Length: 90
Image (cartoon, rainbow, N blue to C red; front, side, top):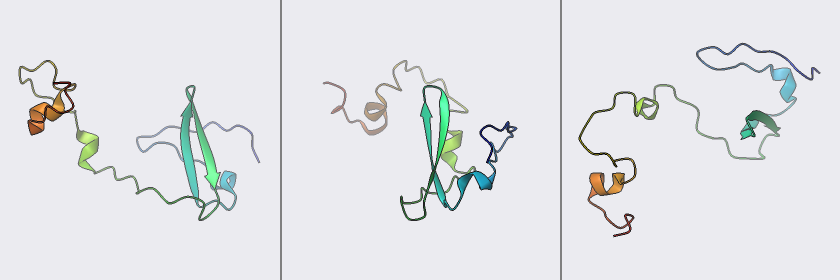
């Protein structure tokens, strides 16, 4: 098995050779000190995360911001969206 391998990064991300995962059916991804760790998990060791859906609207959040004259919207979003001051220290 290879110790190091250069992979191209495409619009979809990176494809890691399956041979590196042995019998694993899932992996855990971790960012540690600027390095990405891919840790193979044996089948059944951890529940699968929901599949990545590139068409999920959450990925478009913030792409087209509107100017609304509020400078603290990120900090006080609950108050502005729900009228809920409970988390505002008020």
